[in-house]
Length: 300
Image (tube, rainbow, N blue to C red; front, side, top):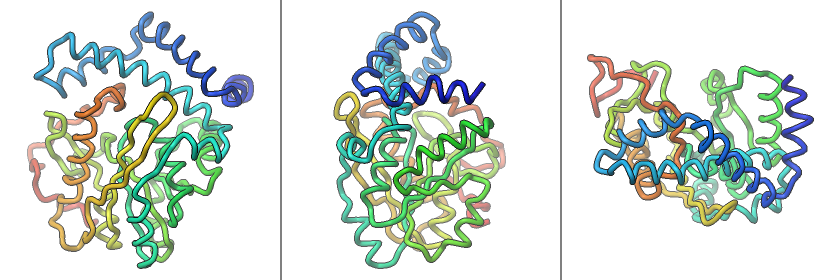
C-alpha cells in the first residue's frame, strides 16, 4: 500500500509546480480543518494553555492561520521529493553564514538547534547546501520502512547525512574529527521524563531533549540556533543566532535553557507557524526532577 501511495500519489504530486500544490493546500484546509476539524482539540488546548492572556476569539484566529500554514507545509514537504537545488535555494535565503565559516576555519564542529517552525524541512536542506560543514540531521525513523527510506533519500539528495536517534552516540564517537554541523530538533517531547531538562516553556512545565547540550559539552561544539522566518507563501529566510560559543564554560542546563528561550520568543512573535498539532505537553514532571535544576544525566 505504501508503494502505491508513493508512486501513484506522492511522487506525481511532487512534480507539480508549488503554485498548483498551494491550491491543493487550500482545498485540504476547507475539507480537513473546516469540514472534519482535524486535531482541533489538540491545537486549541495547546494554544489556550500557551497564551492564557488571549481571549477565545484571538485563540481561534491563531488556529485558523495555523491550519492555513499547516496544509501549505504538507504540500511543500511533498514538493521536496522532486524540488531542484536551484529552486530550493531560490525559496530559502540563508543569512549569517559567517558564523559557520569561522568555526569551519577553526576546525570546529557545531550543533544546530531548531524547532518545528515554518518549513523546517526545506530550511534544513537549504542551509546544508550553503554552509562549509557537512550537514547532519538527527531523526526518528518512520515505522513504515519503505516510506522511511524514500523520505531519507529525499532529505539527503543534496548532501545532508541522516542519523537515526538510536545511532547518535555511535555516530559522534566515529565522526568527532569531521567538520560537521548536526541539526537537533529541540521541541519534541522526550520519551523519558527523567532524562530531560525541565523548564517553563510557553507558560507550561516542559521537558527538553538533552541531546543538543549533551554533545555540545562532550565534544566542545558551539551551539547555533536557526531562526526560520516565512517571507511569503513558499519562501523562507533563515538567520543563524549563536547561543553558546564556549560550552565548557556553562552550567548544566544552561545551553538547553538558552535555545529554548530563543525558540519561545520566535513562537510568541508569530505563533501560527509552530506545529501545534503535536502533543508537546503529554509528560508530567516527576516529583524528584527539579524545575530549572541540574540534570545529572546530561553527561551520560
